Length: 453
Image (cartoon, rainbow, N blue to C red; front, side, top):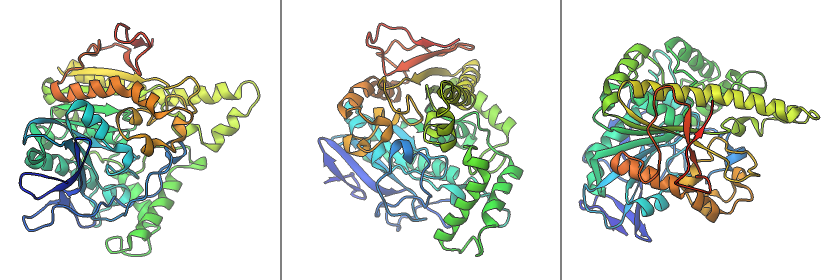
């Protein structure tokens, strides 16, 4: 058993690493902004995750463990070395992905024991509201961007509280994958977040999908409300999830080929400024920022690999596989690769220090290649967490562990110092198409980065 100096939080110690689960950072009523806890509120509770529908990524990642779902879900999981002195450790705050519709920082996929043990940092994994409950925009019902406000409130909790667990509130890096990475792009242009972190890691952020304006967000909101018979403010959460699921299917279009999330941060709605003001803030704070940004080589294989339409195309003799791969790769460049390079250019031109990377296949016969989410087991989780992941089929976890070691080392050093030592990984320059490769080639550390022209 581990306890913080105040005794307010209790965790479990295994192999020198302490994990504190169900640490509450705020309360929130439905469709209302989060409220920080009062002194009399309980600071810990049973682990519960945001209400959600099944993830479309289960076909490649497998199904996560079943955890209780509740609208009272605003908690974090804190993982630290068991012997940490108060206020001494650099902190990584993790924002999970899931298309703003699914996910949880409490899932075993994001277990940080291995990362903490190897790097000596503190890791805080955040739960935040999802889908309609987090991002519905409907005048008179919900303002939108509540999930984004949850993330900011969690960062403010880190600033005010993490020292008790051993973390240094002056050394905070925010990191996230997919929707979590895109959330960080939003946070970088919000003035309220400027004192909360100065380093950021964006993994597979779909920056090619723009944040909607109010009108577009309200159309998605109406698609939910039109399918809900009860008052959305008091309807059973199961009814809200059913209405959301029906709306998502409609908005995905024929065959479900539109993979863009229907609920996501809304431009011009508090706390996210309009596009020009967001860009002004981003450029203004760039000189104080250090950023890692990257993607996987075959991002869209996670979405198109299991899709029946793409499966049918691949079945066309001789040319089907080439056509499907060409379309999928082109979309990946449009949604992930090229926008991340442009974002890196913009940050670099404004004075930020940026490092870019690309994740390559973990094995020559990887079922989905270097697909979306393939980077996650390189950083987080353990053999039990990833045992049933189709994307890792046939690859022993000890091999995954070995392949991920350079990435864990680089992330840990970046969180600690803002550099990527000891890797020979040079900062991005404007106009460069060079990506640093993970996993490292067999001639590691003397090699040069991959380049695409």
